[in-house]
Length: 356
Image (cartoon, rainbow, N blue to C red; front, top):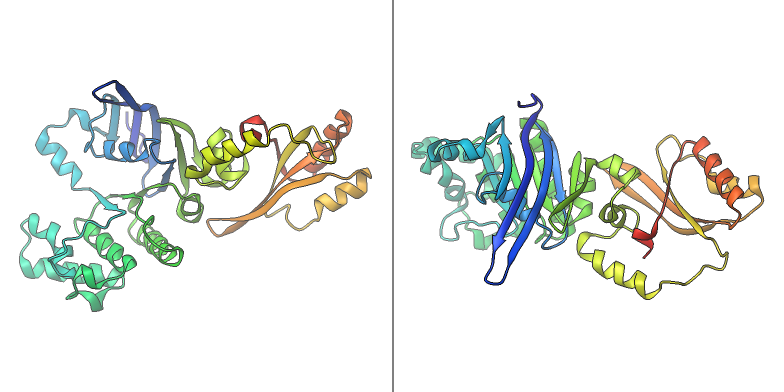
């Protein structure tokens, strides 16, 4: 039975591709739920299966096993006409824009409307409203070759919104853009979400995109959903190896393997303080005003090693973190951890999944 708040549900989904030599299991037992009106991120390195997953959400790829429900309807149980009708409520934008190069901007936006047999002038009126929404009213007679990358993506967004979809799939939609243009596109998507209530699903390999715009995130590694939840919860307490690389070390997915190899190369090196226990502390708004590390050193009369420290912007809120190397004394370690927790900090072990 459909949960009233979920617009998309994925249940025990598998996708297997048959090659000449073997079967490739691209997705393995994926389960996730996306709330109506959410901005939901799916992140993973190249080849992790995230693009295959997003194509399964509208049955451009038919799962080998499992179910995809959109607004409570199982896509596998729909007839071809019913599936086509449902797909009209799901639009998609891509990294490569996919614009019709021989058509003007306004004709690109009109294209899906004309395919629905909307009258030409009615389609143009709606297209002009959408171009105004994305800030391109003055470009309606231009051609894609005359536009910047960010402008092309704005046209693609306007075109995707033409059919009044309830779900917008963004497959690496900002990967080809520079950081400033990426920020502008994310701001536009956020505004569209706030103004229309459309559910946005973002496929990306950039953790900065997830931190900036998403409410929830799913992390996929080797075809397996290894972690999902609120972005701020995963920032505060990453549980998977991939989540720890993303949050603790600040590595985007394509850096995970390089980071692992680098750790392996330096395996066995010890710090001058000879610490044998490492912890990560996460600062919240309630714990960010006290110089807790300096006060802890004064309180215990023992130094600790700050191995890593940074501050990340998570949906406009500064979130700080540190990785500390504690002294060898086990009893002192426990006392320090208890002291940090008493100051309102989130504390967790940094285990070998990240350190190696």
